[in-house]
Amino acid sequence: MKGLQLIATGGALPGRLVTNEDLSQLVDTSDEWITTRTGIRQRHFCAEGETATTLAVAAARQALARSGLAPEQIGCCVCGTLSAQYATPSTACLVQKELGLPQDIPVLDVNAACSGFIYGAGVARGLLAMRENDTRRYALVIGCEQLSRLMDMTDRSTCVLFGDGAGAAVFELAEDDGFAIDLGARGDMAITTPAGGPIGMDGRAVFRFAVDALPRTLHAVLEASGKTLEDLDWVVCHQANSRIIDHCVKKLGADPAKFYKNMDRHGNTSAASIPVALNELAEQGRLTPGMRIACIGFGGGLTWGGMLITVKGRAV
Ligand code: ACO
Image (cartoon, rainbow, N blue to C red):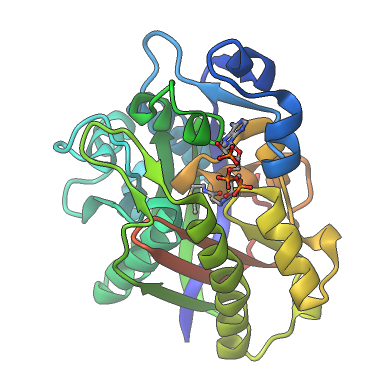
């Protein structure tokens, strides 16, 4: 079966660092409350001149440069986001323009909230497979968010959770029996964001959903690929809350060292969280050729998505 293999990654974090202490000056909260309930210690917000678009372009440019590919070799560009600067043109079209990607390829944004990067990869795989006689078998997939634009900074139950950022990956469509992808959704108002904001959420309902969706989706991709948890080098989950990941590690009886976490430094960056995490692993030299990674997203929609990929070549 043809699947996506990871060729290269890129990332971009905006310039304004906001600590829990900073937020405690704005709302009735504390570093202790936020850290123990979520694992989050700080997050980055866009500074003057930074937007979801500038972050997406920077992350995508870095991933493309590290892939060693020319822009002409890219066969599609898909961006997962719920906080795009413009409804149209899509973020992906703006990336296409900035990077000089071909004009005769599909280029679009996908909104599946925190599952957006996995959904984006699924769409990209379908688009590449649809054009199987095309030699451009590489996809540029991005997750980017400027959630600070959509937050009610007087609502302590949400404003402490989110951050801005972008991550990108170049994938190759190649024969790979170890590849698997599983996408699903259940229409539900547990997380809502009207156009223009603010983000609203029933935190406890989302927690219950997440601790069910995460292990279920991981099992689904493992079963589809005939692999076990032991075959995985990394599990890169959506970085909503460290307690959600800890809960699942316990439920699965898994090795916690395989479950990468970075929400302490970035908060919840929705569709960007998985590619930002992949990029950090790559930059730390911890993604090497042949490694198998499960990426699991879950979030607004409600949506969920899992993907089991192999690292091809050096990811950075
Ligand atoms: N600081 C201090 N107190 C707070 C804060 C805060 N930032 N936020 C809420 N509280 C208070 C509440 O007002 C409440 O007070 P009360 O008992 O006097 O009414 C108390 O803390 C408990 O509130 P809960 O919402 O019940 O707190 P809970 O323990 O459920 O933790 C949290 C909230 C962290 C959001 C938790 O529900 C959670 O992790 N849910 C998962 C949701 C999530 O991660 N969403 C991310 C976005 S969606 C996604 O990415 C999938």
